[in-house]
Length: 178
Image 1 (cartoon, rainbow, N blue to C red):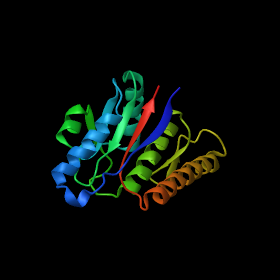
Image 2: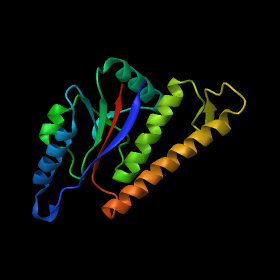
Image 3: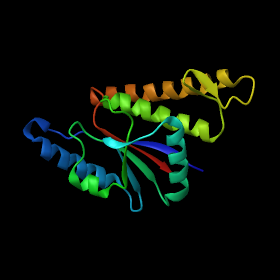
Image 4: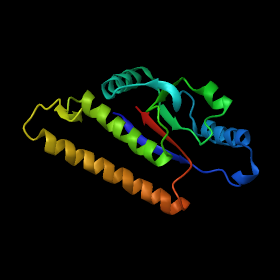
């Protein structure tokens, strides 16, 4: 059984008084403090390895079977990660060569985890504007219902965070645990 959780690491206060390097160091300390012994840390970084959705599902399946504890994905701050976080990371992956806001990265990444799970469970999914893994008659309707529910939940979470923080910001980590 695998669980999915999203942990919010609070924003650093008084960033106007800090240099970029100091901000990265403080963010890095918070990220490393949130980790548990045995965590497998994967950074979502623009210089990381890129995957197709099918490749990512294979990657995720392999990691879920080989990582002994938590598989932790971390979104970096506006200036990237500190050297300490890079050293603690097992690897880096990239969702795109383009730059996205933290809000969009969270949505895109959650959707990609959901898509990877549908691929691994041989459930229907839409790729290149066509349905694949459509093993039963109502596959499109079931896919869109699930997809709509997960996006609705993700948007609800983002709206909740935006109300708490005044605006959606800060570092987020996503982890998958056994």
